[in-house]
Amino acid sequence: MQAPLRALAITAAAAGVGAAAYASIVERNWFTLRRYEVPVLAPGAAPLRILHLADAHLTPGRHRLMSWIRSLDTLDPDLVVNTGDSIAHKHAVEPFLAALGPLLERPGVFVYGSNDLYSPIPKNPLLYLIESPDQARRRHVPDLPWADLGEGMAAAGWLDVNNQRGRVKAGDLDIEVGGVHDSHIRRDRYDHIAGPTDPTADLRLGVLHSPEPRVMDRFAADGYDLLLAGHTHGGQVCVPGLGALVTNCGIEPRRVRGLHRHPAQGEPDRPWLHVSGGLGTSPWAPFRFGCRPEAALLTLVPRIS
Ligand SMILES: [Fe+2]
Image 1 (cartoon, protein in one colour):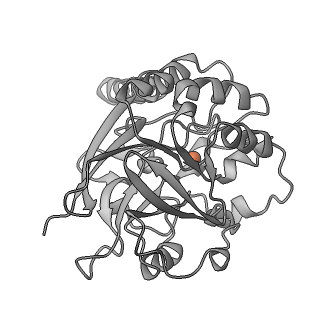
Image 2 (cartoon, helix red, strand yellow):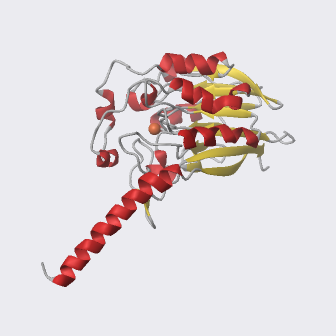
Image 3 (tube, rainbow, N blue to C red):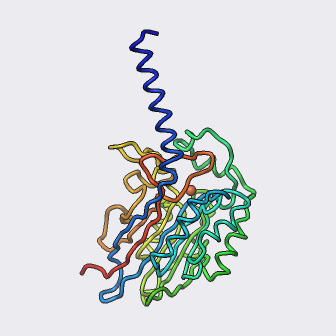
């Protein structure tokens, strides 16, 4: 190889190694809190703070992640919503509940994601970018303690809305909540919760792990005001200037994370949608690039009339 070409190859290799080290060591632990104001409440209602957690994929030993989650209690949220993929190891339930810590004393709501049921399997990390839902659906027998995880949150008083509806009081509000199990692995049973929402509730909240449009269309048709989902990891690897390459579900890259509406276009009163970019990654794809791990504080305020 000629000297200029050799220098170019060495520089490219060094840049690749540097980017990989940054993505796996620095950015993966560079947590950020995103704040949004959502004009969804009735005129005159007091603001309500919702802390949205998703995709922790916790393994024992991730102490920085655990202590950061625990620190979010200082935000004084009125309600905590966990949209799943909380654990990634058979011994992660206790550490996850310990990380929630004081947050468990607040009103809470949860659904599962596929990774709460199935342990992560070794694979080429780049497959994250091309994985199809069919690959995830091939496994049928859960091998993670998802029931212990749910029992831990439910024992603290959090509402389990996996294919269920319920009611939660948070702040001054009476909130109707409907949720589904993970649609990414076809465990959603929207028919179990189908039906018009209660117009007398102060807020109608839909909770789901994966923001699949076919499911969100049904939440919208039933009159939910706000939908919360995770799963996408914000794309996990984002190209500067281009953004996310994949969403790993049916939603388009433009709504891979952040506050939008569903459907993306249509009537002015269609539901708000917040997709969390998530707190973690699969242990077998331990990197994030251009897409910092996050939690979100949604401050709900009165609608703009
Ligand atoms: Fe996830």
